[in-house]
Length: 442
Image (cartoon, rainbow, N blue to C red; front, side):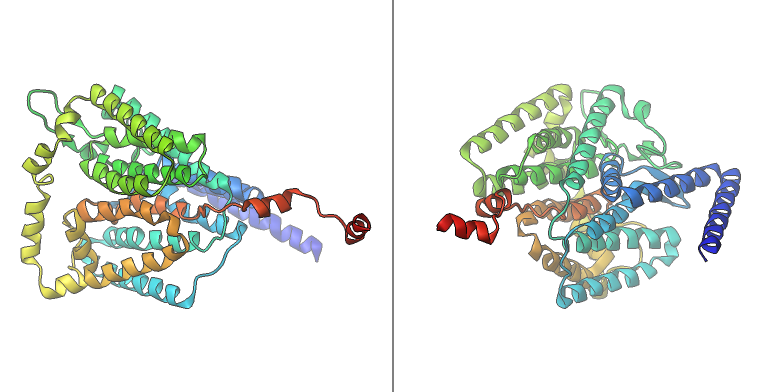
């Protein structure tokens, strides 16, 4: 029987090698991807935490890496993040969610899938995109919040990946977006990065682009940076921080400034103000303000036109980049049924809360909020960080925009728990046998 199993195993391996070889000859990109996937699976089997941490690092560093299939740019690392979370959940202590929470999550996922079918007129890519952006982050959040603790290497990998994106943002600032674009890495193969520049037009000077780093565009990068800022500062203020958290905070402030996103500034300022009032010693607060001021001053020196863009007069003059007028235009065309259940097309959707309502309706949006609130009952320490996403969803296009939901959902695996002094002392002090303790007493 053992010999038969051995022969069957070698036959299966031979068939797999033959299939991969044929695929490589027919479509080299697909073949290389298949080989890479096979090697990763073997590595993950032997070193699961290292494999999951590597996926986390690559996702935070290059979330747009992938290939365009039909009309949909498939982000390989971003979709691989759900695999990383599954690996960590299998390796971590966990406590399943209650039936009420799972019922709410299931109701939202059902609505999201049903809504996606209405986009068939826009093609399969639109259906897949809606399901991916709406459902997968909620699934990741469900998995991550079911862990009662997680290996810190998994969390640090996200931060190191983000810091790499900050370094690349500086390269883009110095070299320009066109010169530094790497097909398949900074943007999906087959996708045109020049369409994602978000050119900022200025008077009396040269036009410049928001710095997207590897995050698709400047607004998305700014919102992701705002989340990393509040995430790292929360760890510092709660006594769980490290030099990596401090470096991530500084890098996030730099990234927010370079992104050219006013939404990101608002999304970071509101929870930061709350955090400074609630947490942290006076020294930490002063240090955060001082470092923030120095970094912002450096950004404005590197790109002086940003100073005019970040003024209140500029925001009022542009009406939030014209969003208020666009919102009024779309709201005037919506019916009561559209408000309740959303519209039937994803082809043209405005930014902000109006776009969320058009895609999900008040019913779907209410279920989404209820699901997030129910899941986050296990992570009360991170509710302030989610204010970043809430602000972005109201003002800009953070909802259904991949990095601003996938990465924070996975980072909710961080429980910020550590043994108390008494428990830690009992762990470090060896326990004596009962006979020895009795002998000492006598």
